[in-house]
Every structure is written in C-alpha cells, then in structure tokens.
Length: 204
Image (cartoon, rainbow, N blue to C red):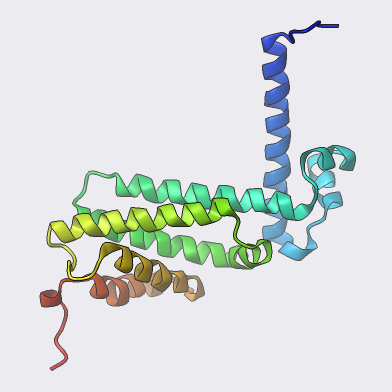
C-alpha cells in the first residue's frame, strides 16, 4: 500500500503508459480506415493490430467511431499547424498567402484520397474540428488582410468573406488528380479572384 500519496514517478509512468496505449489505438484505427475503408474497421481488428485486448480497448474508447473521431481531429490539427508554420514565414505576405493556398489544396487532395471526406461525413463535425475550421478561416483572413494592406490582393471585399470563398473553392481540389490541376485551381481561379481589380483582365 502506498498510503494516501502515490509516488510522483509512479504516477507519471502510468500516465505515460496510458497515453502511449491511447496513441497506439488511435493511430492503428486511422491506418485501418485508410487501408481497408472506414466501415470495415472493428474493435477486434484494432486489438489484433495493436496486441491490446478488447477489454482494455473498451477502457479507453466506447466504440470505433469515437477512436476515429480523435484520429480525424488530430489530422486536422496537424494540417492547421503546417499551414500556420507557412503563414509565419519570412517572405512577403502575398507569397505566404499563395503558399498557404497551395498547401491547403494539396491537403484537400490527400484527404480525399485517404477517405477523409467520407470519415468527416460519417463522424459528423465535432466541436473540436469546427473550432479548427474557424482557426483556418481566421488564419487565411489575416493573410488576406496583410496582403491587401501591402497591395498584393484586393481590398474592396472583407477578408473574412474572401477567406470563406477561398476555402470553399480549394475544397474542390480533392477531386483533382494532378499537381498541375491544383496549380491551375490556385492560380487561375482563386488567386485571380483575390487579385486587385486593376490586375484582373477586363471583360471588354
């Protein structure tokens, strides 16, 4: 018996072990969803791949859906961190904005290829994912505002509206099959829509 106070080292070891087990469960479920399809993942499969008994699995998660929800949230957070890193670069605001848009288009294609859209639809949008989406909108809106201030993009439309348009337009990148198609989407549709009126071709 340890009495009223459990030694700190013991507590930290147990917490580390639990975190590692949880991470193994989440990552394994995600890889199974990618390789075999979302609907085919079962608790038994996860247990077999991780070597964790089903009774232990259920101590961490009530079902497969809850595991995949955590996996999906982690992927979205990782993508947002990548975009934030690009946005904080040392290049001009316009260059950073375009780089963020290109990377987001790539992410959309990767997500579609790995069944991310199916996953998001099946799991519904959690509050965590919704908050990350809001952060993405804010990130792009800030870049647009900075670029507008420097004259790189238009300033006659609120940055928040342009950010919303941009994200929805780039979501279509998931249907594109090549890097060239992604570049055309960014350069010939999105970037031209963001360009200052004097830089856009006239309709006359």
